[in-house]
Structure formats: structure tokens, C-alpha cells
Amino acid sequence: MKLFLEKLKWLGLAVGFFLAEQLGSMILYFSSGVQMSIKYGSKAQEKIRAGQILPPGPLGITFAILVSLVILVSVVWLLYHYGFIKKVQPNWKILIFGVLFAYLLIYGLDNIGSWLMSLQDKSDTSNQKALESLVHLFPAYFMFIDLVILAPIIEELIFRGFIQQKFFKKPWLGYLMSCLLFSLVHTPDSWGAFFTYASMGAVIGFFAFKFKRLEYGIALHVLNNFIAFLSIYQMIG
Image (tube, rainbow, N blue to C red; front, side):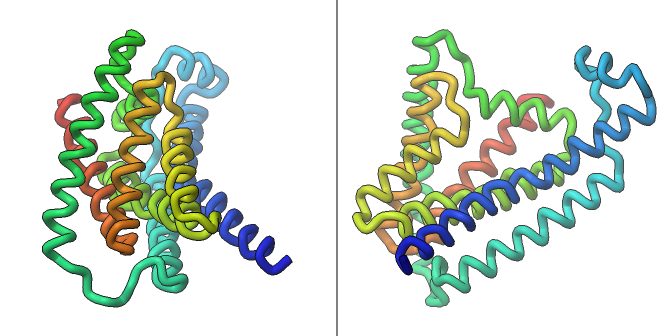
């Protein structure tokens, strides 16, 4: 019974933080809807269907950022409280050069994923397309907080922390499940997209497991998302 309750605790935290990661975006969507209702009234739905969506208001943006920062502080506290991040100084040589090497590996696997997607007449993942649509609606500084800082930390806590370390007695099973679920939550719409996210999860998971430092995986995930963030904004000009 004690073991069951322990597993239930980790499951509850995983689901809770997964939902919390979406909270900032949900607030901005709501704020955007309010702006649409104020300006267009009964024609708001018609404008939304036509793709003429107004950006969220300043109050909604401020509230979303504050909520995201509160969630970020909560996640960092939990990482230290449950010992997912050690208070011992990291090996900076491994952290810097290991992260760079692992990122290059992810980049290479991503190219393989893109090739697999092309075989199914897919040019990009559904997750990437969703992000590209958000940058036209949400301010860049919110996207930076959400995509580059908050999402990597929460996702690493859930997949490489809770799932990989706490749910399964056998480490290899936790590793495989974390890779599978990490890919599935990014809503792959092709085998190439599934491979892209599963391989990314495999590299990050192995990197964190090999050195027993979750913060190494977080650093790698942050770097990956930061480069993706720059690429998206460069692409839209």
C-alpha cells in the first residue's frame, strides 16, 4: 500500500506539472478571446474562423508571465527538495562539452527524422507548426520564458525525473517509457516525427542517467529549445 501511494504521488505531481506547463498559454488564449469579444462582439467567432485573431491584452500577458514564474520557482524548489538536482558542484567540463556533443547527436538524429517525414510527405512536425503559429500571437519574451526555460525544466522533471527514476524498479524500463511518452506528448503525426522526439528523449535521458545529474539533461534540453526558438524567429523574420 505504501509503495502504491508513493507511485500515486509521483503520478499526481507529473500530471499536475504537465497541466501547469500549459497554464500560461491558456491564460493568453483566454485574454485573446476577451480582446476579440470586446472588439468584434457577436462576430468574434466568425473572425476567429477566418484566422483574424487579436493578440492577448497587456493584463493577460502580465498575469501569464507571473503565473509562469511562480510555476518555475515551484519546480526548481521541488527539484532540490526531492533530490533530483544535487547540491554538489557539477563537472563543468562534462556539462559544457557533453551538452555540446549530445546536442550535435540530437541534431543528426533530427535530420534523420526529417528524412523519414519526407517519405510520408510531411515537411514538419505538428508540434513545430503549433509553435510557429503561437509566435505570431504571443509576445517573444513570453515565448522565451515558456519554450526555453519553463518547458525544458518541467519536461525533464516529468520524464527524466518522475518517469525515468521513480515509476519503475528497472532503470531500463523507466528509460524506455520516458522516451516513448516524451515523444507521444509532442503529438507526432508521422513515424518521422515520432522518431524525432523519441530519439531526442533517448539522448537526453541517457545523458542524464549516465552522469546521474538531471541538471545535465535540463541544460541540454534548454540548449535545444533555445536554438529552436532562434530558428523560428529567424524564419518569420
